[in-house]
Length: 117
Image (cartoon, rainbow, N blue to C red; front, side):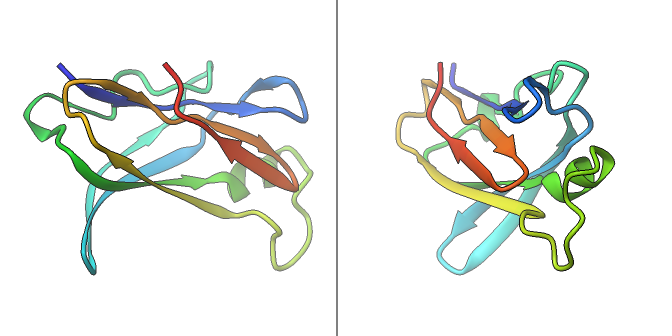
């Protein structure tokens, strides 16, 4: 059965991104439906899959990472407006039976992602 997971790594400090709010949206043409909201744990991960079972289906999704508050708490995001605050990652799920892992690698002035395992 397919599932969607994520985690956040602070690449500048070399530690997990703890306490970051993440929202998941399903995108259908011009419609954006919020499916859930989670917060990363001490390991920078969610306590379970963000999406699985009958709700896991092929389509376009968006993970929205609220990184600004985390960076503020670390004392590295002090400009106004913030250079990084809300980070959306839009991606497609083509195979509903597979595991999709979409992590965020975060630093104060850059981020990246990939399809992990």
